Image (cartoon, rainbow over all chains, first blue to last red; front, side, top):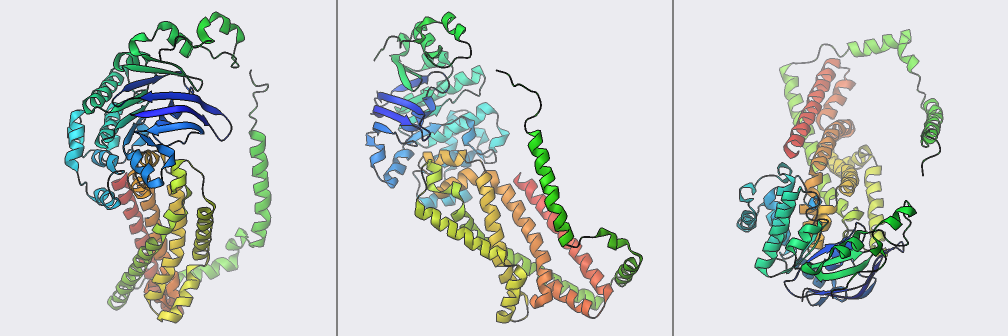
Length: 272
Length: 274
């Protein structure tokens, strides 16, 4: 099993409820797209799955491990088995591609190896392998700030692949890219996850990409799961409900609410 | 809803604070007996002119240049060894006192009370290290090691260790923490996150501040020479005591060259690391 969330809630310290009573599970190798409006809780959900955020309530199991009832060392090695592709900001610009990719395995390497490899890259062949698969093999010793946005995102992807995670997470991995590149990165993510037989959960703003590349689509809205369906079952009405105005929320203009899609109130068709 | 008035609501506050700053400054200038007019009174100008005229022409005899060369080397050695010692002290201390580098911060958790207390103690230690001027440390150590650069090296190491640690930790705290956080989320330890995540973004600033401190150390080692720590300062002290302005002028010129050299080195290093 990739992960299992049962009745999970996240309440921030200021009292704001980010996620409310989420139950979600995924088998090994399942590929899931998270969609929903900004602020719905997609990033919070991904941080839960990355074992970087502790749920306020509920049960959370990642890779068959209860993430928050194990000691710090075990938590670290659990995190090393989960890889996260961030929006491009996670790689320092003044770093060489080879170092950025090798950093992916810091969680698995003993400390001395991380130190030595910082001075002299210990496994350039391994980094090269992942980069070559993403068509970036010749940029191994270039600096990250000499790359374009799409190339940088592929370096981030190469790092996560080099990490050899059993679950790949991606937090809006393509939101800063043009449509062609966005599609390329989305396709590569899915291909690599499939090839390795590992789970993939990616939050996306581009609904068409989510529906086209991911077998399973989870809609998140206002901290709850609005729907959890096979991509083929997602209807126009469900999407309209997902992105429509939140009922009861203080709108800029109350008149506009009436003219908008009427499905905003109820969660449409639950698939699961 | 639109704002009621288009007047900048921050302007009044800014004006107020500027006035407060000026009002505070005035009595301080009076206490410091700051009277720039005194510079231009006839008698004073004469006295200064006399003093400065004594510096001309600079001394360039072979014997003196020989002495100068040895003293310059000694000063450079003192400054460099002092900075090396300071780095040895500053690197672990700065890592220990940097809040944002703690495992708790990077994981987004709370800080334990014990860790916060230890950090506060170390910060206090840094204040003591850099709060006592290097000249005072040098006076103390000259009594232990006798006349010569050894006392200067130790004095520089201690004071500058405190300064470097403070500024290093500030630079580390102002760096972009997202790459380091991402690495910690992927199971990396603190050391790995620091080396691979934080350092690439701040190394240029760290190096340039260290080189600037080295430049300061060159100047400080001259001052310490006056209390017997050797180098250009001691030579300068002797020349001044013998009222030999020409020698003093040559020493000052050497000084300028050293500072210019440090500046060029810093610029070159920054370019390399940019």
